Structures are given as structure tokens and as C-alpha cells.
Length: 593
Picture 1 (tube, rainbow, N blue to C red):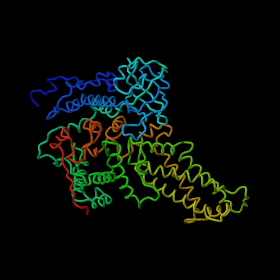
Picture 2 (cartoon, one colour):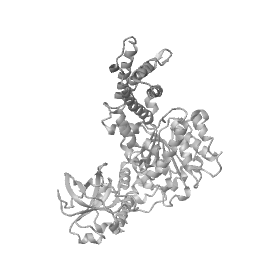
Picture 3 (tube, rainbow, N blue to C red):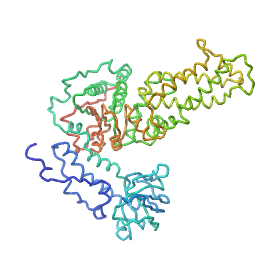
Picture 4 (tube, one colour):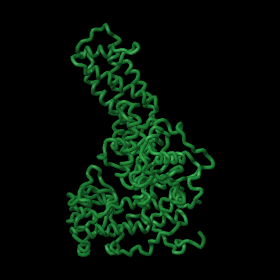
């Protein structure tokens, strides 16, 4: 530490500009200049002086990587997606324009997926369609622009861009112009903002701090962190019994560190392919769910994140299959930022956007669950009134319309299942879940009678009124239950249905096991919520080290766990220096029990 660091000697000033502003300020000459940041990119040191030194070392390499990506796109610009400009109207004085194009030619770089505009896209606007970067030098007009907003329902042709103030673009421009997609820089933009955040550096400082070898993995001096069968529960014990010794040991060691609140800890679950790293993480996460611990699990990509989340959902479904009939409570599990529901129904059920949509429909004041319960109560009260006057002759015109019951019951069942599936049980409370299960059972009993062959409305009315349990008719039971359920659910602090942002915040705050790509976890920094107990980074060897800074700054109580094939970590990653501060949990290939 003595003698001053190289950073102190060089006094390199870290850039304080907005990332997109810097990118848009580059000229063609800058982009193709491989030495643009040569003097600012320092060699990775053997150790870092502080968390500030570590974070600061990423700024200029991030700019250099972005410059190289744009240069590569410009060299292959003839294959890039492009469209003709239809309209270009200024909407904000800061250089924001509403854009409308005809349609996009060419596909994305993989040649399979049609291009669709997304925030963070860097595009080129030119009065000619360039086939090479040199064409831009001969072009009468061109500028870079950044997509800042895209309409979800019409992102193919309508979106909003920001252009540099010196671009010379004019309001209402209609001349023949082309827009060419170059690259999306949103992940790098999020990293940039996270580097400037400096919110919670405890875990980063723990990772960087050298620890004497004899103290690695040492138990806390303050608390007892032993894990036994009683603390993890019968379900978790059953899961652990299906793992080999190394997998079970890794989980028990990790659970012990999660229980400790006195010191930060870092574990690395490692092993070659086939040793069950994802299986081990999934079993650990379902155990933590049972222990009511809050976790955030990140991975390098949406696909990798969905894979781990899917494993957890499968385990949860197995544990609840004999406990609930017709649904599985998944409100504690949330997949954040992944809009692709093609990975399977189980992934769709935990996807944030899907959940918000279902809950918005369920909580709607005029058509949602409360309205359906009221409608069913009104129907049953009308039926009950006729039960109380059995001697009064009922004319055909006054018979109950049982087709109305079927319609109400269908909507009510859908909303009750939505509540049980997408809202955590700890928020609903156990007694309300039991009431919902009972209400669903009574609805099924009603409908079995309704669809009985050769039974008319008068006979149905008698069946609804006469079928009794302990002297109380089926309709009367349902009426009492639904009134109590409506009153009890009405006391819960559900978010306002008209505010999807409130529902989104509610889903994130209530979830106990959140999944997100490392990049997308940036959005979690703006959510007001309780700290996580544990951060898990799956497939850490494939994660760009600078991206890891995003989840590492989340509010996590004490523990961080990473999994990966140790031999695949890049030799340039500072993560390799974790050897002197983490507990390594090695998995082996021994057969499962």
C-alpha cells in the first residue's frame, strides 16, 4: 500500500460525462482510431488500492470496447438493418425527435431475428444509404443518434431518438434519409451508470480485501451458524438427500453463511461440467425460500437466467403438488426483465411483465376479483331469498338464470387462481389462502350440478338449495364464505390497478427469489425495497467483470455466492484474486444417491 499507487502518480481523471453523450460525440476518425484511449487504459494491477481504484479502472476500457464495437459495425454496414425515414419531428428541446420509418430491411447480426428498435440502440441517420464507412465521407449529411424510447406495440416503425446538439438535423425533416442500426450499447450504459453510482461497496471491498489463508471459511465468532434438519425443514432435507455429498455440503455451508449477519462472506461453488452446479444452486434457492430468505440471482444473459429460474420453478411445483389443487403459489419467484415467454409456461408465470398484466386485470375495480365476488354474492343472495320462501309458487319467469352463474364463476375462478399464483402467501396470509381453496372447491361443486345432464332450471334451483353439509345448503355456505373472503382480502394493501408502475414495484418488493441478468439488475437499484439476504451469480466465468459491479452494489445483507467452471475464468479477470478472500466449494462427479 505504501509509496503511492500508479493511479495516484498518473492522476488519470475519470470521465464524468453521460455515456451516450460521449458516444454521440465521436467522429468517424475517432471511431476508427485504435489508439483513442490508449493512454487512459491502464494495465490491470496485481492488487487494487481500494474499491474506488477498482471501479475506476473500468471506465476507459468500457469506452474502448464500445468504440471497437461501433467500428466493427461500420465496417460491415452493408449488412446492417436499415429503413427509410418517413417523418422526423422534434418533441423536446434537448434534441429528442419522434421518428417514423417505412420498414426495416436486413435482419440482425445472427441472420434469423428481424430487427426491432430498443432503447440504447446506436443508429446512423444519413441522406444516402451507405454501403461502406467511406460513403459517409462523401455523403451530404449524416449523424449518429441514440434510441431513447420505443413503443412496445409499434417499435418496428415508431420510436424516439436523441441526436447530438451539433448534428444540424432540422425539425420536420422530410427529405430522403435512411436510418441504419449499428449496435446496442444499453448494457455498457448500465455498467457506466453503475460505476458512477458508488452505492454499496461493502461486497466489492470484501472481494478485494486480502485475508490470511487460515481465516478463509472461518466461522463467525459472534453467532452460531450451524444448520440442522429443523432449520431447513422436511422439504429441504428431502431435496438434500437426493444430492451427492459435495453438493449437499456446498449448500449447507452456504446456508450457514446466509444466517450470519455479522460479516460479509463470499463463496464460489465450482466444478467442471456435469458436476451439477445449476442443480445445486436450484436446491439451495428452494431451501432458502422455505427459510424465508430473500435472494437475487443473476446470470450473464436472459437465457442463462431463465434456465436457473426454470429449475427452481420445477422444484417448487414438485414440493407443492400435493398441497394445493389446481394451482402452484409462485408469487415469491420473479423473473425480472425477461419478456420472452417462449421458454415455457412455467417461465411465463414468473415473468414480471406477464405477472403485472395478470394482476392489473385481476385488481381492476369494475371488472376484477372484487367485482366478481360481489356479482356472485348477489346471485347467491337471490337464490337464498327463494330458499327462505319455499311455499311461494315460483313462476318460470322468476327462475334463476344459471347461465349467469356459469359466466360469473368462470371469471371469479380465474381471478382467485391469479391471486394464489401471483401473490406471495405471506402477503395473502394462510387463512385467506385456505378460504380461496375452499371457495374454488364450492364453485366446482356448483358447476358439477349445473352441467348435470337432463336437469332444468327448476331442478337446479332445488339442488343448489337442498344439498347440505351439517344442515347448511351449498349456496348458503358459499355466500358466507365469499362475504368473509371479500372482507378479508379487502383489508390487504393491494396496489392500485390503474398504476402499472405500482403493481411492478409491488411484485418486486414482495418477491423472495428474484432472477435477473446482471445487466438488467441495474433497474433494481431504483426500487425501494428491503435488502436481499443473498446474491447469487450463476455461470460467473461467462460474466464480464465490469457487469458484475451492477449486482454487487445492490443492497445485500452479507453473502455472495458465485458458480462456474474455475478453469474457464479469463486470466485477466480480477475475480481470480478472490482466492484470498472466498470459501471455495468444490463439486465432484460422484454419483447421486
